[in-house]
Length: 322
Image 1 (spheres, rainbow, N blue to C red):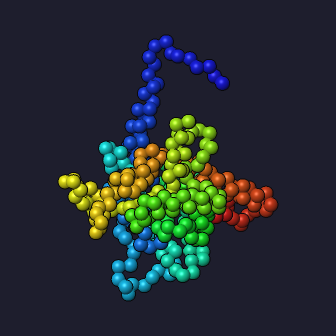
Image 2 (image 1 turned 90 degrees about the vertical axis):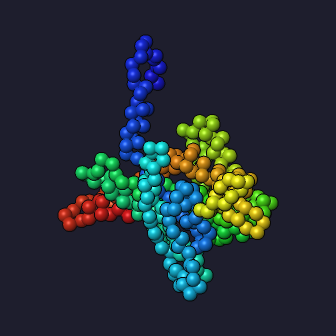
């Protein structure tokens, strides 16, 4: 390891962080999130509440005679949000129809396929001889998985899908519409879910035992894992509480203040996703999930080429990518 030397006078290379910041601010940032959960659990409302903007419309059924979706659909919408000079290109992918049937077998296949397709598209662009200087990143950085607030634990479909999703994307589970549970019911429900997640060996984000994390980051991640799943309430409406306008929901018993930590864990989720772990979600996608996909694909291509040889008329390696 090279010896650390202190310069005898000011050189100026410490300004490299400012140079990087200037370039990044000009370029902006990309964040891609997918929402997975049954219709009616407030997926659109939560994402609108998280970013304090109306970004997506509800995909639920508003009329009794509206037909129920027979398959899981993939619907993506993109926005550019600017805050204090920082530009965030936000790609939101919704999955209407997921889990809405009596027989939900394989309803998760379109979601898994979509996530893998984004990895495959990025890999194809990487392998192109004349590739773009900055490859457009559509890889999914975070999956918000919405759990029905039954109070009885996870359903079989929840266990299956979260396990499959956790192999290809960063999964963050949330208990939707948690104001339908009392605090005691909520705490028991969260404990039951954590026990089931551990029993079924579902590896959720943030991951533990990452060598690059310092002690403070590891402790913070432990506190996050002890809070998962986040019990959340979303609302785009403002209500008056003690003379102040707050985002919340009014019912016959009072007001649920979305940003009051004693009412729900929305603030904890928002701080986790956007204020402390946003960059780590992006990096983890590239360094863990995408790298695993990339290695598997390139090894498969190598094996195909070794077994068959590259003969005239054969498919080129890129065309063999899954």
